[in-house]
Image (tube, rainbow, N blue to C red):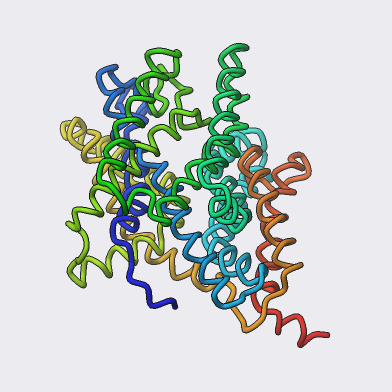
Length: 423
């Protein structure tokens, strides 16, 4: 431990970014009782909610917080003379527990359904559920290059940001010109690394120190750029997709996400400089620390757990149809989902904790690089193809196997003594 005090504003931003995602996903579908029973109906948000979607979209803050945290880790690594293997193993092993447990659980469940004769149905539903792994895939890549990103910032300052922004704008222009939104998936490796650079700059004091007008200017400029992109260049009017606007700005990302992150950096800096969160009650600080510890678990499991909450409410509504309007209301579903998440995550977290490899006195850099590559490759395949392990689905089968092998390899990389004791 470095002994450095926690940055409560960054911790809160990271935690809120995941909680907002959970609540938002409870709103994407309505449960309606029909003659055929409970039915899921995609929610088409009224257009007046589009501006609010930008206010509530705080996923960019997660990548800002990641850049902040990675910078501290890289600085400590340099002070202590740690190897690249130590960095990769110490960061990667924390993802192994949540990722391996979640993917294994889904692989077993969907594979059993597939082998029972419903291969197509299991594959499609599995693929849809695994869409949330876009975040883990991207984050694994960013973690791997974070030391280089910190060096680039310290040497060239704003220049890497300008290059990434220009490339992201070029991808957007290309995508809109040929009307092919899927081209914007290239921005996963441009927009989010750009936002990560903002987090590095934030840790270096770009907004937290110096003239007060800087964070105000960032807040205004970022907000204005979002408006210019939407109203002047035809970007989607909402930050997120809805039933009648399935492709917006978050997935796949546009330059507007980086503009929003710029505004959010200014806002977070103003909150930090006000010192309103400089000190917190011990209980609140402890709860915030716990939430940050399990946030990957919350992100991975929240959609299945929302399904559990919605399923229970639907069954009760069928039994008591007079109460259906209340039971199936968005507010009750959101509260019930948060309750199920709060009850389930501690149990799942203990299981995941057992799966996290211990960090030994020495790490194997070669194995750490190999493990990162396997985990990244496997997560990408699972994101695109699902978790069905079946001869008829070689892509998802290979993806699941790569995650399993990558997790095992990460354990060997994190504690080299395990390897040396067998030699």
